[in-house]
Amino acid sequence: MNKINNLNSIRLPAVRANMPVRESDIREIQEVTNILERIYSVDLTIFPIVKAGDPITTVLFNRIFSAVNNLDKMVGIEENWKNYPVSSGDDITEDLFNELIGSINRIILNTQNNNVDAKNYLLIRSLKEKLSGDQINILNVSCEYFIDRGKCIPSRGLFIKINKPKAKEIVESIGGAYIFETTEKGKKCYQLTFLGLMLTEYYAEIEYLLVKYLEFVKDKFITDPDCEYFDNSELDVKLGLTKERSEILRRVIHLAHLFHGSMSYSGTGTWTSSYPEDVEELRFVDDIRDYIIQHALKYARLDDPVSQIERTQALFVNHSENNLFDSLEGNSQISSEAPELIKNMVWIRKNWKKYWLYLLILFLIISVNFFI
Image (cartoon, rainbow, N blue to C red; front, side):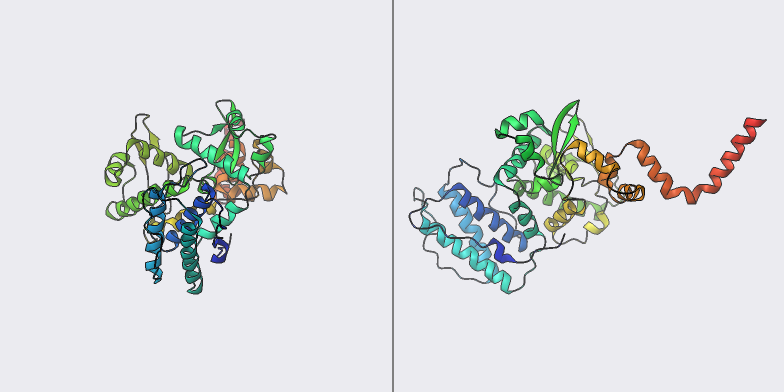
């Protein structure tokens, strides 16, 4: 996937006179401000993202104003705010909202004119914009279930939750790069992918945890490169994590496969992890948030189906025998779903030239013993 660097795509429209400011308007401001903070390598300051039904408070608005004001200073824009700070009890009017919009759009224009690299942040937004409101809602519901329970959401529970006719068709229209059907303890359920999680309203907070975790990993690798595994006790103290946030982090590390080898969990709040497979490269990474996106995109296949049957068929049908083996060899996610027999066939195909002489000798020994 190619990067998208046209920041004009995220410029925000003003609210018309006498029109109310809605949660969706605030959510859009938050998401765009978060993109700009990522571009300028600033810690995200205005999460969690507003959800439908959440109150629009002056406290929230002042936090957004503060974040935008900080970005103004970074790009060299001086603002003469008329409405900031917002006093407690003040109405959130369209004038106040549009002043904020105007400042954000000036930052976007300044960033565009100065050719600041937007990295992969706009690509993620463009992927999200291709999904409908119902599709995004499905990802949000699945993510909430995953965060709360650490499991994929049962299909019936998901269909009831989204409460839409032809719910299964809506889910399957999202694409297997974001969510896919699987079986857990004999029951059909839907597993969110890490890329799918990145498109949800929960990602800003999860990203914050992952950035802190990977900064910890970088530092630990430099001081203790031979460490095979580390447990969360040191991590929790270093990052100031509660038991609940530590558990969320564990689940997301496992989902994103940001470890190499294995992870273990005691079931009582203690867990162990290991360095990511590319930890040697990670220590030279300046923008960890962009690294996380690249990690998610590395294995993403936007043409993957959601249906478990179709995903299984894709392993064996598609093209010629060679293409089947090539796809299994070239994609770690697909090969992990293949039956053990197919994995063994792939290994033999890749390695028979190295070991043919040993196999011939072994065959001859067995043959001689058989006839003696």
